[in-house]
Length: 348
Image (cartoon, rainbow, N blue to C red; front, side, top):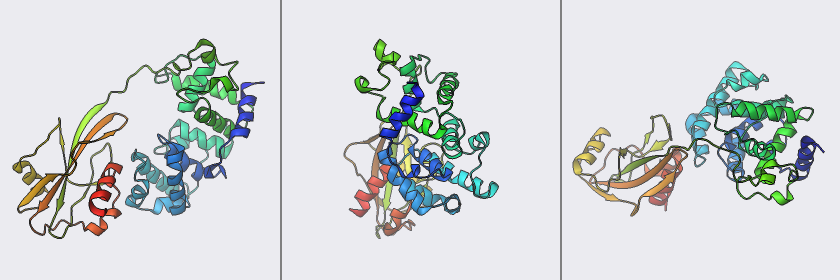
């Protein structure tokens, strides 16, 4: 039995039921693929349901404010996905009358959509022979066929896509692509796969040569940068506070945060002049007392960054005209780590 027939038969027996698989609506497929980038299905599924409920159509998504979208996205991370989702919804609404374009290259030019997502949409929704290449596909093909070209090398995507295109020939494109991804997610997993019971066990080069744990290959190590973020939380006599929208590009752009100082290394203390300068910048004057909220630094690991975070409570002696009432603070989209602080400090 061929690779394709084995795979499709396995998929029919092991296919998981997801709401985005209930139809071939491009909006559903697109939304699910964007949410599930860098995200496990168990974590992404509730977000998908919330988005579909809040924005049943592309036009609804396009008509929402960015704050509404970021608020629903809170906790999912990689917030550029949400901003790109919004921008593309607007573009489809304005340029294509709210209907997803069918042309592969046109779809690939939309913001936040690359070859993988465009291939998923075209194959599942429009029956076009465009093979998907994601982490699951790299892993599955490199192991079964013993492909030792590093998947982060310049020609890897082209090589693996061509191989997948050949294997897809004659199958229903959407089913084949979903089967490839499903097999990688459930059977040919990154660590300790059950190779003894694998349908490709007798044909898998990596299994025969004892290289399952070595494939797929990567040639580059990710450089990780350490950053030290200090959030200063002003509290006035009315227990109001101050938050601001983060404008800098990079992590958490357009989310809300408390006034922040980033240092080049660990810093346990701040002198009065540093705090006064920060408060003056935010038009806050008067006497204050400062105390550190967390006894130990709070750490968060991102793909290319290790964050060390501290929160400092700045109690003002009088009303500070801060602008954010304590009862409204939950209405602003924040990064998960700031949400956790907000909920513990202001709500509990």
